[in-house]
Length: 211
Image: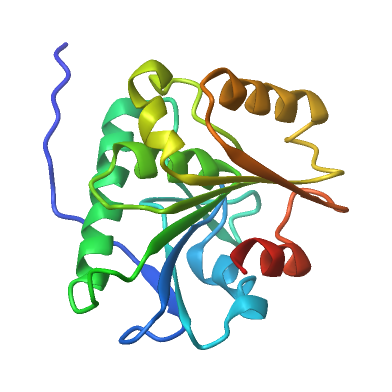
């Protein structure tokens, strides 16, 4: 048996919040595993001030959640992972190019990734073709398989923020400490923001982080 790959045309779905023609900044916000873009984007209503454009791309792999009543999406799985990573990097770059084409070159691009979306956001900021200024890794972390020796300089040029709730069952104090140690080992500046709560977005913390 021989494995092959064929690149095909896909239709991707994304949602926006805020002005598409004259934003001061563009925020790409990447949902977590099992989520969809529209419900996730609603969580950014508290920071929708009419100046920033929030863009929520939806991951390309949808599936039924338990009970088959709701649908979620995933950025990747362990199956054919390198191909899936390449696909979502190309997808996010294409979306960014489409949205930025009519905008002035000096409109900054920021990315916030939640949970599984955090590693996705980090990979895109480092490996993608889109110039990103800020990266917020919320309730997630750095990709374990990224070549930090090769890409540390790129990460040092980014404004990196780690966000986690004090009761997050996935980002435990031990895991957070591992993330911080990795950043420290490569002299990558970062800011750590915490809030009282579990694995979720938090409106007041969003206001602090987005500014």
